[in-house]
Image 1: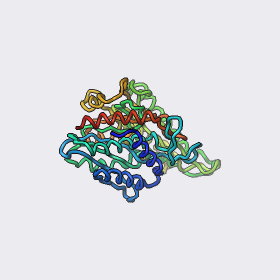
Image 2: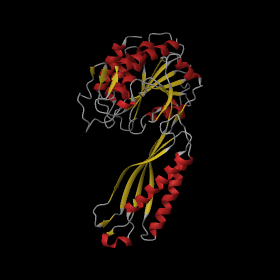
Image 3: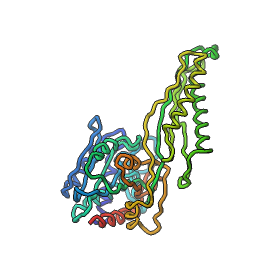
Image 4: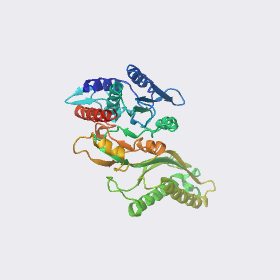
Length: 386
């Protein structure tokens, strides 16, 4: 494999594409396609409904045996409102760090993975090396689902999937799943001087929040636990609430957003069923005042957790190329890894350069030493496929 310079140049180009989730990623995907085609590597695109975003899948090596899949998302979070001191979409290097939006989350890994694919194309592989790039991960692991619909039908599924989210090159074998919901609380408008005669939608929402906090207390007291996580139990969190037009009007609508970040052992549907029952009880009580009172819970997005056994062959394989002292851990944030494990029944390890502490912040960066560590790691992995 080549030196870090090729990966670094690829990364600079990747950062130059503004792939904030609200924009198209096709320019970036086209650039990657050209790089791959230069080494004779064909790629397949799987588009969204608009045709303005695409997943990419490429494979090099034999087609009749399971391969090693390198996975990353091409979209990044917005920079608006952040106090950047460098240009976010023009990579800059200073003091051993490369700055730019997406440098650690997760274009740094993508650059090294592309470099590994280009090098692998020159080798007599016994097992294929594959690349999967997705769109819209940052808004709920949305885009990769279409790619998985295609890969699910393939005659050969990967032997191993490596998701390159930033872990400081440690092996993350687990993460929580997430389910996001929107609650619509319907009351009845009235003059505030007649407030007791109308159902106050904000009051309904406050009762729902109380129920959510009760569910959280139950999870803390007798829910599943996994001490490998910083927060070793499933959590319920209300992140947004919106209701009311004026102080002298009893509000007829209040909307709140909440999420469940759950251990793989906990089923969010069971928690939702519990909340639905409590919400209906709250609504029935309010209907004694206003017949139109109602509470509706809408599912916005879900993705599963990840729980890879450290004893599977794929994890042992990766361990042979890891730096001394590489730890196995579980991370608080979600990844596309749970979806790969669920849809393809493939072992997944999350491992990539950089720290999640730098992600989503102004002046996001990845240390050059981390990119070099990732390159050495993938060099060993590619060598094992010969």
